[in-house]
Image (cartoon, rainbow, N blue to C red; front, top):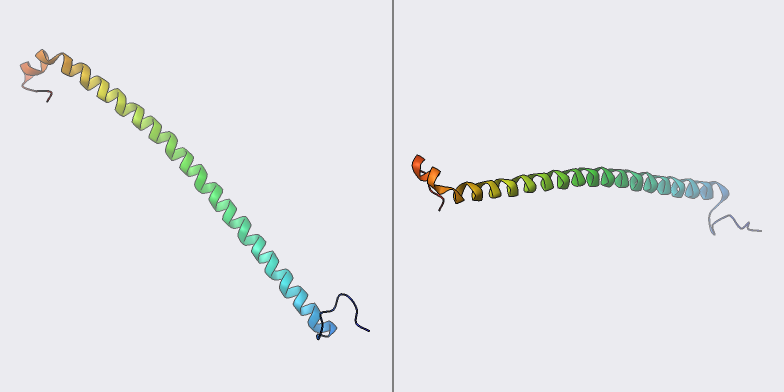
Length: 86
C-alpha cells in the first residue's frame, strides 16, 4: 500500500532526498529574493538622494541665471570693465 506522502516510483529514502532538495531550492530562492529586494531598496534610497541634490543644483543654476540677467541689465558697469552680455 502506497502512502500519500510518497512520490510514485520512489522509495521512502529517495522521497526524503527529493523533499530536502526542493526545500533547499525554495530556501535559496527566498534568500535571493530578499537580497535583490534589499539591494533595490538601497539603490532607490541613493536615487532619491541624487534627485534631491539635483533639485538643489538646478535651483542654484536658476539663481545664477537670474543674477546674470540682473548684471546684464546694468551693462554700463560691464562696458566700463570691457565685458559684454551677448
